[in-house]
Structures are given as C-alpha cells and as structure tokens.
Image 1 (cartoon, helix red, strand yellow):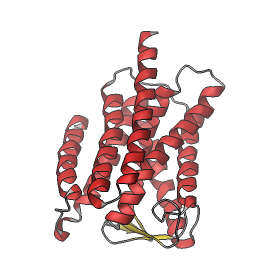
Image 2 (image 1 turned 180 degrees about the horizontal axis):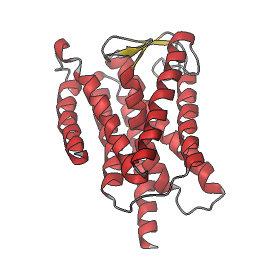
Image 3 (image 1 turned 120 degrees about the vertical axis):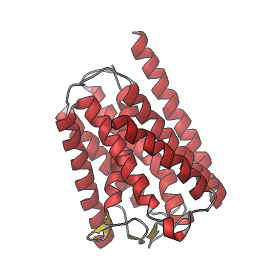
Image 4 (image 1 turned 120 degrees about the horizontal axis):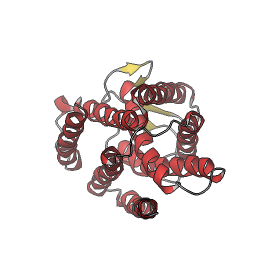
Length: 255
C-alpha cells in the first residue's frame, strides 16, 4: 500500500507539473492542489513510519500537522511569527482560518529536510550533531520556502502578504519564522531520538528525491511565471544541499 501511495503521488506530481507550470489548471480542478499536498504529506509520514516505527512515525507526523496548523492560525489571525498574511479559497477545508492542507505541506517539508539533514550531519560527534542537525534541517526548510513562497504569492496567489519585504515583497519575518518553526520540529525529533527500525534505503531515497521534485516543480513555475531570480537562487542552494547529502552518504557507506 505504501508504494502504491508513492506511485500515486508521482502520477499526480507529473500532472501537476504540466498543469501548473503552463497555467493549464482549470478553475473546477483547483481541488487538485489539496490532493497533491495531502498525498505528499502522507508520503512523508510513511517515510517516518518506515524509519522509526509506525507508532512513533504517526505520532511525530501528527505533532507536525497539529502544531504547524496552530502556528499558521496564529500567523493569519495575529501576524504571529511570520507576518501579516491570509489564504485564499483554493486550499480546501480550513480549520479556523488555516487550510488543513498546510499541515500536510509542513509534514512534507519536514520529511525532506529531515532526510537530508540526517545524512549531512551524521558522524560529526555526539555533542555537535544534534545542534548541526537542527540548524541544517531548518536551513534546508528555508531553502524550500525561498521558492515556495514567491511562487505561491506572486504567481499563484495561494496566499497574500499584507506587508512588504526585500525578497519578492515577502517580509523577512516569514523566513525567520520558517527557520524557527522548522528548528522546533527538528528539536522535537532530537528530544525523541528514536532508533532507526531499518537500514533499507528505498524510503530515504524516495524522500531525498521528493526534495528535488518539489524544488523542480516550483522553479519551473517560477521561470514561466516571471520570477526567474528566485528559481536561479534556489537551484544553486539545492545543488549545494544535494552535493553535501550525496558526499556525506558516500563517506558513511564507505566507512
């Protein structure tokens, strides 16, 4: 079943790349955005379950979903952490004033950043590694937001920023907020510190691939939507993180 869900995500992803990048998505199909984000989040949850056990993986996934939705609600209602913004109606069911799908989007981001940070920071010392893992994981999440936010705001208008900022009119507080919330989720994991249940690489490989797939989709939309600068910046950052990931993984396997 888990592999079937992943294959469904890949199918939905391919459809999404074509429809969104070339602005072919008809209004009556806007619900497809919700299906995409929920499926992507479920894939990340499966990754956590495969790596750390079903009970632990589901618990950690629920923490990410619930906390992120609550924090996003505080952001929308009181401009907490991120700045002043609001969501439009394209994201499906809302809890208070925050789409349920946002929780699954955060779950996807944490799955991607977790896998890359886990490998990049392995074997660097028991004291230094937890700190490095939190910092690297949070920076990878912010890297993803450097393309997610400009595309969602400037090209697709999935949400609207009320203030302004130096980076595509997005407030600096948003990226600081992303860093802090991502760091908090990674800190939760460090405090939990579950042992890995398996050394199989299929789901880590899938999660690291999803990082690149999401970046590719949004960079393509950025190019076609007229904000190529964001795409170029994130492509360079993504190349750096992938370079570190595959180098550290090769060192670990070879040791």
